[in-house]
Image 1 (tube, rainbow, N blue to C red):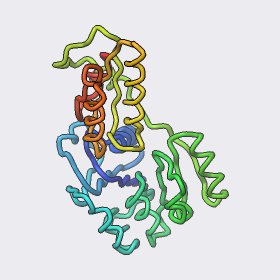
Image 2 (tube, helix red, strand yellow; image 1 turned 180 degrees about the horizontal axis):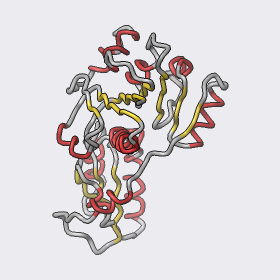
Image 3 (cartoon, rainbow, N blue to C red; image 1 turned 90 degrees about the vertical axis):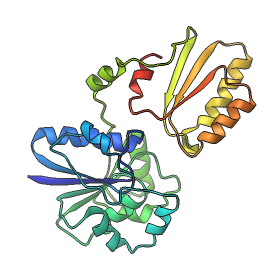
Image 4 (spheres, one colour; image 1 turned 60 degrees about the vertical axis):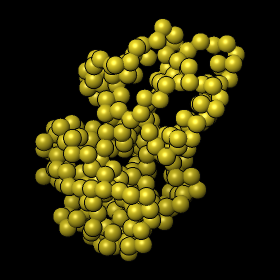
Length: 262
């Protein structure tokens, strides 16, 4: 049986990369053709195990995180980083499933018996890890547009493919049936789920909300999530009088029970 290992930063409910890894791992495990291992490097929420197929192995590396830890670990020689993150077990396919440590580690293996894949969820603007991508056996993007762009910018130095993030519609619909303890507004309701960080564009969204509100449109916006920019977003909302329109709900283990009400 072929062994596959995914390594990424955090195994938590609010992490989109983790949810994608879980969906893929569950599907692959059900085929009965591969043995799948998930190796989160940092935070590990044990309660998430109930959503993971029992056939999938979960082997956390650290289990905790603090600001600056990634910077410290970047000082570790790459070949040592690989064995530490992926472990001593040998897999036929090793996947650096996230930008950063996992990407650097997966292509630093000395083993020629394994295939080493890099997964690019967003796009590495400026190709800061270009030399690491070139060492990979394959780079996978989550959209065709990014795959075509990367292949061109890498000058065809490595095979580049794309694979859309999997969505289990049945699970989403079931989770969407759960009740919420918020009153559903009569106005048009928009809901956004995501990490509150600069690249997500939430500050731009709030500026759009402000403009629409000033133009007389009636609606509500629920923001589900948390992140490094959360405080800045709340402050902007308060300073620009958006509290009657924008509601910050915070990170949720089941965002679908909210989005189904939009």
